[in-house]
Length: 509
Image (cartoon, rainbow, N blue to C red):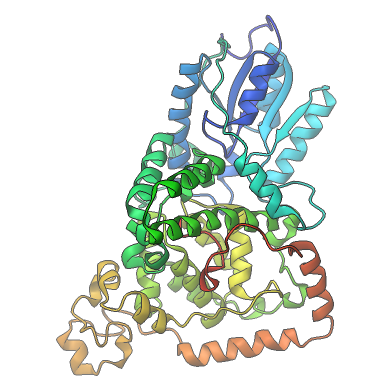
């Protein structure tokens, strides 16, 4: 039976899937099944995928996850229904055809667009007397007055038993097609495809917890080792093919079976980053405006007048003249993933050395991440740009990072092949090569590889001076106190914190 046929039988409990594309440990699905007949629904919203943060690599992952989700739900008795259109219009069409007893979903910490969409859905539900049950799906807590006790609540949520998958009666609706990238006006996109199924995510998690993760604490920072040493679960967490609780509980269980102290410490670091992942998402949940404006308003107008689109283009395309920065941006373009230390470095270079506005570089950067998560992305873009007013400035020297994290230039030479002939004593600073050295290396600057855009030491010094000048401005301390009251906890979380140098986020997944 397709949408548009007369209503029959009992009204349906709609389970609206968004960033929770799984059947295991899905509370909205379980509770809806307890309430009555279920219709599992995913709405493909063209306007959502037309947003400047969206990219084909993200939809490619989502589409594959939807195909597997449909199979999983069919095994339970009711395959996933996919409809394309504006959310309220799709929901109203189903209501008219079959009747809706309740709408069920997990809470979503999204961007301004998804917030407006949800308000329209809430108005629709209220108009028709349909209860909308939004359940907490991860560690982010809605309507939180302050952070006191947040860590303890996170612990309790993660330690609750994971939920199994309920049996579902058939709903009789046509499942509908899962559109391709071209149907949404996306692409072409060079990123490598990532296997999006829960089974693939669990295989990554198992390999990490059994063997790959032993050297995680040491190896997560270098792009030479991070691709193997990190779990690589971030897309699965971002799009919900695995729940944070499932991953956390598997990690805790694995820790008990390892005799190696080094491995147990690595698992501690990993679970701490699961905590910090939600910590940064909570910032956007508590203050949605930080997607568009500086967290501390004293930084409004700091970079905007000087923003240089040419520098932005060079940074996005890996043509800055700093080998490790360029290698990272090219690797991210090709794979959709980058370890966190390198993400922090490229953002620091954009914000300080190139003096780019975080809102301007945040958009193309979001499109490069298969694991794009709004709460983390905008919180981190501001934190690494120094506009929060409560964090220490982290100005990464791209040359020092290059020497520390890729001393032999292995990663650089892979992603910047024009530098393949440059000797190791010049690979991090090719501008120091004399003309005859450049010719011998087949790497003439300005011809084969770009000259660096600015002197990194001078640019960093000037950037610090500008930022610190704002910190001395009238009203800075009052604004800082307001932010601390809203975003900081007076109680130290029980969970172990990441090492100080990496206490900046969770992209090491």
